[in-house]
Length: 519
Image (tube, rainbow, N blue to C red; front, top):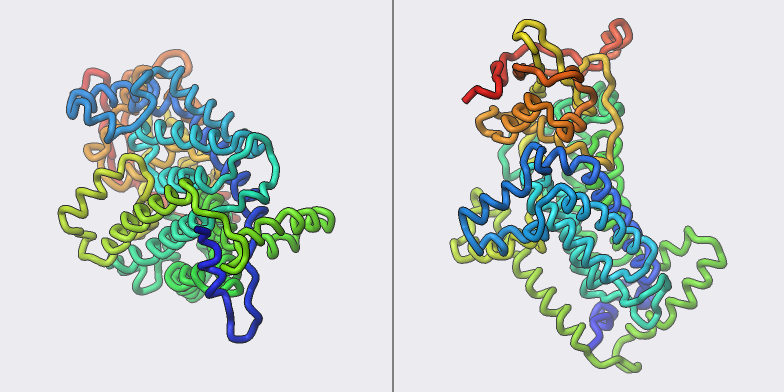
């Protein structure tokens, strides 16, 4: 059975002739190469940090984590913490996972052994996310895994790069990827309203967001200066795009194209004002799946467009409605139906949970979700449910004698008030990000922070490489401590006269001075 003719049956509009089944050969070709680029970025970004974060002399050593898992839950750990690092938790193997994933992502970009390369990219990244603990617990990490898994079934079975007119993209997987985009965007809007956060309800969120987000860009400083009425209108536009526009994904082709443009507009705005790793690029890549070859062909040179039309013809013919030759169903079609049913069932339960008080699903349902959660095949989403209205920043200092203190400067997070916010995405400095989360609580709620301070006292080269510079190049300090400041963007006048992008106020001690002998 071919699934395409089911969609063709209903693709009529009252003002147009029946629409021919769309071709997605070039859409798939472009989607897979962009996904390969994003995988490459994710692996290379992590490769530069992995030993400092989870290496044997890092902040949260992966091998110790796995040892503790095995001690606590035994053989069940292999299911609940799926990772190739069970075979080898060394620094060399962690680097191998990063570099190996980067190499296979290049295969995806080049269209060589695409399906096996996608399988290995997914396995390697899942392995790293599993042992990454706090440092790989971001929504774009699980979004990449979910997208990457579906891409395995979306990709053509071919050895070398080429369009495959005999193997058109399976529409059932195309719609699962679109459903993923819908869930991502719609859930992000729902959680903001369901959280009860007053800044979302009174539309004042953006008066805080630009300066309180983890790693703002220079443009965020300028956006923060805009008047309150503009910020409120921007919040309204954002809610429309997150809560209404996602439904255009399931509308007619013309409305779907409009929806793709509006969703892409929001992502570009976020990308320009905040450093959110590869999240915006990945979401834009999902938006690409709302466009067909006819639309994308308009932006191609004439010869390439003609070649695309020629190659797309067999794919379009193979999706014609009953009355023309239709291929018999295959075992692969059956597997994709089973996959779709499972994903729709699990994701449907997650979506229902958005509308329940505190997301309290019945216990049997919660147990089902818990059992399938380790593979990150279907994930809940929802960004910025609660808006932070202040920006506490942790400033780490060290000393040899307990009297003269020197500051550890981070590469990207705010510190020196005269240093402008930096562009860093799509790279993600994961320690800088976790410092933002740590500042919102206390060190007792962030055990990794004490490990970080201990490694500074030991002078760990791997951890020091995560920082901008080491103020103790000859010998590690005997004491470290952490102060807490409240940071705000300055205004035009202050920046012009003093040259500062930030102003800060002393809040107190985040962590009093400690040594390696401290409890």
